[in-house]
Image (cartoon, helix red, strand yellow):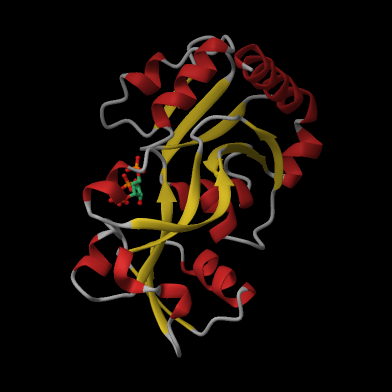
Length: 212
Ligand code: PRP
């Protein structure tokens, strides 16, 4: 039976394709995609779809993709969705951090603090666990801007190299969680296409192990 795999575009895209190639998959159609949205593997009976990270979970949860490759950050933000998380690809590594301007004294501030983030659920859970009163302001991109122009006291965001924070004079106050790319699997597909899915997982696991 053929498989459909949802790949996350953007930050993880190139690394995911490189890992698939290392595992023996034919990703030329994804590399040269143009405007096409359903992209057949050139070596295996697989179709790829290239989608935004939240949509990757949606497609896998609804079973229109059998597998998905998506960051743990997106999985944490979308807690409670229905899928199996099967494999840590050990790539796309970054972390969730709390950051602010050095003078903000975020953790010493009395009363409610304001936090800007693309990840409201993660941010709220973090400050709740610290018993801190927080107002979360959802920002869709360039979150680092929000404390610089006085909208918020600090941010919760992902940090990879740290260069965006540094370039904007922000400092890391805490590391909330380590993040990497994961393979998720639709629950019905796991029953109906188990053999095919296990083969893909084994290929990817081998590629991960070869890199370790
Ligand atoms: C992410 C994140 C930071 C930056 C961190 O944003 O939100 O802004 O990357 O990377 P660094 O530690 O290597 O500097 P992304 O590039 O996804 O763009 P966006 O802010 O527009 O969403």
